[in-house]
Length: 350
Ligand code: TYM
Image (cartoon, rainbow, N blue to C red; front, side):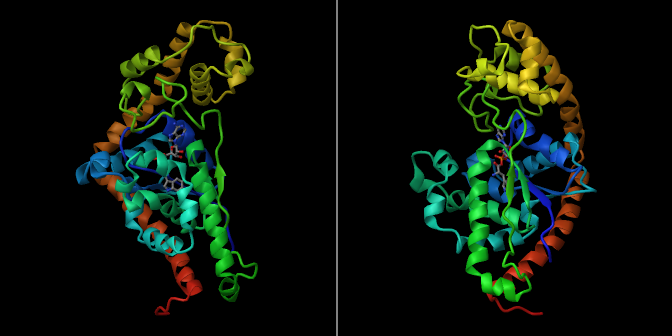
């Protein structure tokens, strides 16, 4: 079984899908369909790692899972040509996590900045699942022996951990891996992060030094994929800026995080470079730039929002996509798990 190029990525169904998720991840998911076999996963097991008050309980989890699936399809992901499913339907994710728990080191997890941020001051009270989150993420990717992982900048450290886990597994079980026909001793590939485009880290509209996030208490900090045209316009008009006109060159965006963020959003939405956008708007006031940004945002996001609305109103169809995707994902996952069990030395029926 040779390693073939395969793309895997995931999005948590935790509500408030926003422009950062869209530009940092989903737009790239759509593009990669042209060149790769892709698996896109709604990571419901990750969603429950924070308190039930955060993920909202069973009914909310199901709604959010359907909403992320709808966002994938509405953005242009083709669930027939590629695979779209929710994580909990394929049990290999949790089984491989256990094996990886015994490969990963506590010291590695202690370095994860996302855990520190999410657990906050009361670390003793964080769930064990939140601590183990990055190991489950490594299992997600490696269960499909995926080689490329499109993500936003904030996931870079988790991807590095996935690479470390793959490498340590290959080292620890090298002889067994070779005995099972992998002559190079490489069973799991080293997954490569794909962090591309001008919006790999979209910032809050209220504070250009903070990441745009689902959990920010201010709805004005983000543009949600379900926002209507008026809401988008209001949020962009109220977005924080500085008193200077826009610079004509990219260098002039340094130390101006809010300006840099809005120009980056414009560039990403229009598939242009920041330099190109500044060539058009440099020297002008924010007010006219913001008007053009509102128009662009509404033009690009409205069709996605209305298609999402249509799909969410048809849960039978959406659930069908997830079940079909899970069946196809499971076929790949089962093959990896059978080999993994053999490599580790677990006895099973042949
Ligand atoms: P989640 O749901 O938090 O984020 C989904 C994707 O959106 C990206 N993202 C952003 N990109 C740019 N600017 C932002 N402000 C911004 N906020 C979020 C994230 O980087 C991510 O790509 N842990 C993953 C989910 C996951 C996963 C995986 C990803 C679970 N297993 C396996 C890849 C492979 C996450 O952050 O989800």
